[in-house]
Image (cartoon, rainbow, N blue to C red; front, side):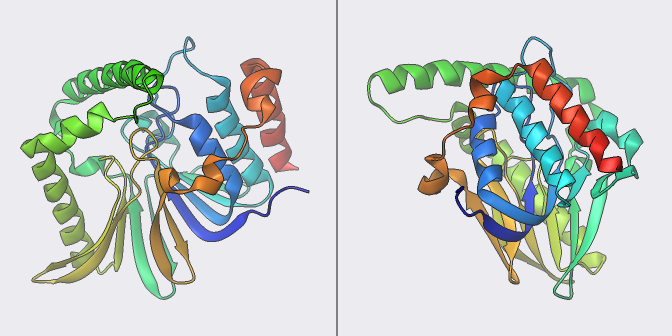
Length: 283
């Protein structure tokens, strides 16, 4: 008998960056297998199409996609909201198949309160005016993640705790802190002016849940964080929000990754299985 999964009304995940060295796909897979969400929103940058390469697509990354497809087959409502790293999917906004849909933004009613959900790159000036610079920055970020992996390998040999170089760089740069504050303030102001009670974003890899008050009113700002540095998600259940933190969940961390994710099936076999499962949604 399998372990009982934790039931959650709504789960929001963003910035998994599948297809990059920084993605913690095995940890994400453990989390997804530990929950039973009624609705799941993938809030952008799920598959990193900027840096996607056939040379790097581990089985655990494909297994995450397959698990999501399996949830759709079981009737879980899944909405894929596009981000900047998967922006090519924006031309498919409006696509629906069974309980799955692609959109650029989503508005939900939660216990009579209106929630406005979108990735958040619309507020990023760099994305608007210097996309090539943003892409260059993404490559540099991925290189830093690679270096970080080596550093953590060495630290592990000496019995030391892991560190996040990218997080330390962000936290030490005043401009980055200012950007995060401006991002949150802008999202809150627009949400308040449009009468939303919740505004939910991703994009900046900074998990947050706080009430923001302006002269016009107040709104609850939430950010789901990421699965590169913070390994976090947003969960809504019985009228309450919380930031899920994988690194504080000892039970889920101890879960074994299914053998199919590690060795038994290659990517081609998993992909064929995924396609068959997806085609069966039409039946």
